[in-house]
Image 1: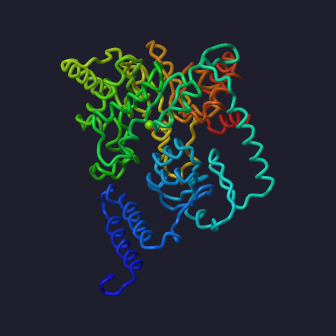
Image 2: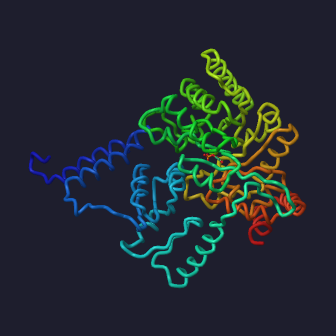
Image 3: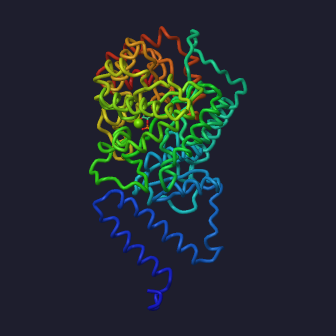
Length: 471
Ligand code: PEP
Ligand code: MG
């Protein structure tokens, strides 16, 4: 087009649009996802054509509102020290998790709301509540300044205690959820009791090919070293759903969340699974190492996964490599089917960990990434409370440890219920740890048990809200 006389920027625009159309009309979701990459390429070509001054992007200190976002954009914005991100599409849970790990506040909004934000106006973001204020009033600003000051004082507490207790003296463990290795520093600072969930898919997502066994061993070794002898729980690869690998083309899936996700992918791709397991077994040889499998739907799934771990142990030992035979093998309780066989799973597994993010999604049939139905995503739904209770009772009967690692554990108003039904280990993103620690310190177990028993009798969401949240 340029040879025929078109302006270069116009030519890029037209050609990018052509490819975007071709890619977006594909029936293969993996190809449709590439639309973002094509647009990204078009933008970068455009920028290179323009003078430095015109595109000397420096968003430091600003809140950026973008329609679409690639993980590479988030890293770039983070390096520029942006204050926050407002996104109206392409919010995958791994984008949200990367933002959280990098400490960038992010709020997702609808396209209509997005179109109403004018350029260059002051914005106040409350990413905790998912609210943005366009041109906030002085009153709102000062309220948030007070709130921020309160948090600073509470979070700066220098006497971080390793042992957390309820008001009546019961010890409760706070473990860290680690997404990126950069989460380890705050976890150490907070003296987390270990890593209760390492989301191992991140090194896979940010690379352009599967990380080798050596690379993985190196990553897991850092995890183990940083925890200085405290327990480390690897959650095996959890891709699929909305966490796609750009370099792995999967079959077409109309419902990826119900498709080749998590342990299903690992059981189908034995080489990738075994490499990950061997890498962790090598790295965790001298510590309290634990492996848990995501999206287990049956006892059979767990046994199949465990078999492969044992094979990997034998293989390494036959090569003269030391492995930790005491490595604990657990089940992530994330599916209604797993809840129904919780007793049998508790008998087979070494421990259970409640993945409430997915448990809520699958029990309530509410897509956790769909803005339209986010109001229906209620982690205090009576069915969820009862399911969690059942899991805890099943683990206790079998004498197996049980913990919770989903975001429900970061909701301070739920802490009395969780302790009241018998949970004593919470694994959470470390940003929420101070508030949960404070919630634990205020709890009297006898009262919490009474509260939990009452909540378990309630059959309506509204009843539970009135009792628990509006109290
Ligand atoms: C969960 O589902 O609760 C969980 C901890 O895993 P993820 O959020 O990574 O799916
Ligand atoms: Mg999950």
